[in-house]
Amino acid sequence: MSPSDVLVQGRERPAALRRLAGRPELGALIAAVAVFLVFAAVAEPFLRVSSLGTVLYAASTIGIMAVPVSLLMIGGEFDLSAGVLVTTAALTSSMVSYQLTAVTWVGVLVSLAVTLAVGLFNGWMLSRTKLPSFIVTLGTFLMLTGANLGVTKLVSGTVSTKPISDMEGFASCRWLFASEVTVGGLTIKATVWWWLGLLLAGSWVLLRTRFGNWVFAVGGDAAAARAVGVPVARTKTVLYLFVGFGAWVLGQHLLFSFDTVQSGEGVGNELIYIVAAVIGGCLITGGYGSVVGSALGALIFGMASKGIIYAQWNPDWFKFFLGAMLLLAALLNTWVKRRAERGPR
Amino acid sequence: MTELLSLTGIGKTYGTVRALEDVSLTLRSGEISCVLGDNGAGKSTLIKIIAGLHRHDEGTFTVAGEEVRLDSPRQALDRGIATVYQDLAVVPLMPVWRNFFLGSERGHKRWGGLSIDADGMRATTRRALADMGIDLPDVDRPIGTLSGGQRQCVAIARAVHFGAKVLVLDEPTAALGVKQSGVVLKYVTAARDAGLGVVLITHNPHHAYLVGDHFTLLKRGRMAGSHARAEIGLEQLTTEMAGGSDLAELSHELARPGTGASPVDPARPADPAHPADPVDPAEERPQP
Image (cartoon, rainbow over all chains, first blue to last red):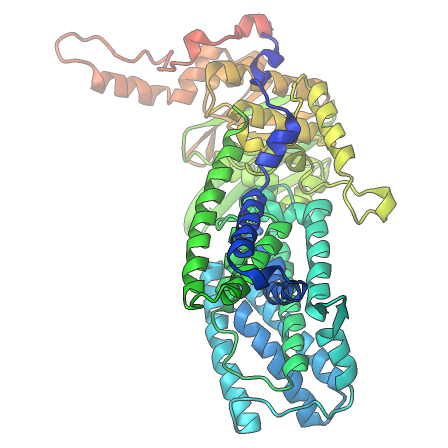
């Protein structure tokens, strides 16, 4: 008996076609095109160049976080603290600069240290306690929600921070995090560049580095990954640090865009990031997904949230739409995963 | 033949449970050493110590003549000990080539090693599998789509490719059909012929006797026997493995009243796989 007798494969379809059909982001791509066509048909202003800028901006504020959140999901974990961590980042930056009367860059850097510390804490708690990340980050979520309000009230006496636009360094920080360029009626905000940068970096890391290979592995089967020498705990901790970095970027944008920060903001956004990742093809159980898909998820979010307004529909229905998209996407992902596991037979 | 690893008087305690006591085993290159035992006999504890997942509490563990205490699978791998687990050898959703190189990814020269050399790794995977006689044209498919036997073979090919000196196989044939078991055992001997030392953990004496050079029997965490191939025949091995006198006793208890016939022949315990075994032991490996 020759071994190849047993290992001979069944009839295979052309590899390129099958690879496309097995892509995790395929469903998101189809959905994005469909959403675009629907709003292009029903809302005339949707197709204006200026609307594209608005949609891209809305998409970028979700997309910046959806990149690290999708990587984390592929790595098999959640981060429920991601939404309020953005607010924490903005509050920290503002209050440190204001209280120290320092150049705003000082606040910006302290804020980075704080968000990375929260990411480190999440990762460390997860690997030390072996509790599910749902519980660990639910704890951080509640703690940060409370701390955001509590510390802000303690420091500034109100629920929002003081304006810092007259402080030194504000202009350069604003340029980095909240500037905009207008070319032929199309206004591109700085967040779009950040989003694009994070997207390219995240996708490259996932698909083309050994760390990316580890991300797939720890999410797909942590025990198998550990058995071949993958540092599981460290991989997951780095993913939480990346979420912290994303929250820092978005937090600085909010601060330097609006000058003051409301301490109660951000609650609920963590779910929208997760929705974007799932619509983009990430499996809830980990081990499968795509960073590019999360961008498509964010784009769908941007198109739908603005398209509903352009179409003059009642915006109350937006969340309903989002929920329906999530369910559809999750079903599709499970189906794609099953196909992937069963193979081309 | 050089000695690869040696365990002397190894013991392991989990809390108050004594999982392993005074177990000794020596492995030389080009040798297959089988560890046989029933469920709970301590096989998996032994494997975890060799693989670096658990540290031993008692005894000495030497690798290539040097005493070690392994703290992580990485340390074991660095010393040339590769372990292939029955159920956690691979990550099912990942492509074959990503699994093949998992934990040992190869960097691309152009990016200063930052980026992985995906095409090169695909080609190497295909070649390494072909060298072991595994024909798998599409290494991009998720490894979960392969059969259990195929996955074991890929894992064995991986260990051989990455220069393992010691290959530890945890129940490689337990979940497999007759034909697939035969294929896997063939790759086990291929690894032996490549000069590796193989520790084969199994509860199937027939599979063990097909390929083994040495047999260690475990029972309730202790060594119940240690035999070179020349010292023991398949029947005796089967009997010892099946519990020997225990089985005779059981056979007596289960005997139908009145008939006096024994339903179980202690020398040949029920193994549905055996009669149809594709590889005849005598043909595969003439008895010395």
